[in-house]
Image 1 (cartoon, rainbow, N blue to C red):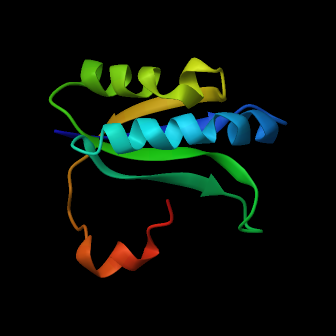
Image 2 (spheres, helix red, strand yellow):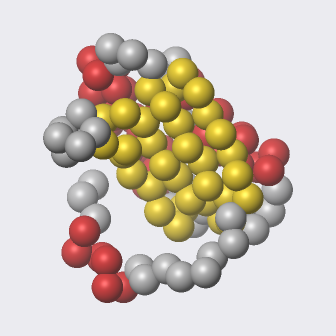
Length: 103
């Protein structure tokens, strides 16, 4: 059952985000079997990171909550707010968007 996890970074947390990012990327790579997608939310300038969106395929809300709790971003206090919402796939074009991956 897919869930969308959305986080909002604390104000003025860019340094923390960049310091923890290598561990965050390693966490994502170690959990690829659960991930349908993940990426930073950006401001309109395309540069400023505001938070993260994850789409995870797990059986329960508790598993989705455990997933985000285990992310180094969360463990290091980056998010100000986190929401977990059950998601029903209506459309997802993974193969045509493979060229957009930027890890």
